[in-house]
Length: 197
Image (cartoon, rainbow, N blue to C red):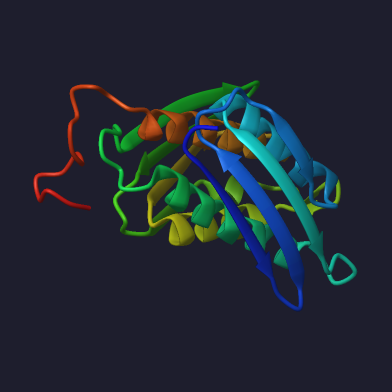
């Protein structure tokens, strides 16, 4: 295993165990109890070329909110731990990704300063995709950004199908994160004029 992390988080609402390897091959073993969310996390794993094992037991009898938001927290913590001191990484990543009629931009800065922007959220017109509440896209990525200490920006330029828009977001995030964590031999310390992040 390369740069990896294992994170567990148990509350009265969720029990989550996650293994993340940033230097993987796209191997996914994901079980959240929410079919569409499994599909999105699988897309994140494969398109970022990460390895992810994720087991989520949540209070789905209430709804999917706690399961999705808490998974975002755990994923953010795992990213932060796996990246480590950030020496030698590119730090920034971005992707403009099409999926059929939808076009999404994602930009990442692994700067230890959490900030989240989501433009175009109103284009998620369908309230549900399968058994996944589309409002939870915002909650998931907000939780990731806060827990990882990253700037995370999305802009949905256009799109009609909520499934396509959300999937484009997860894939774009994967590609942007993969770029940001990539090591560059020209970077010998952290990429910052301050000398630290």
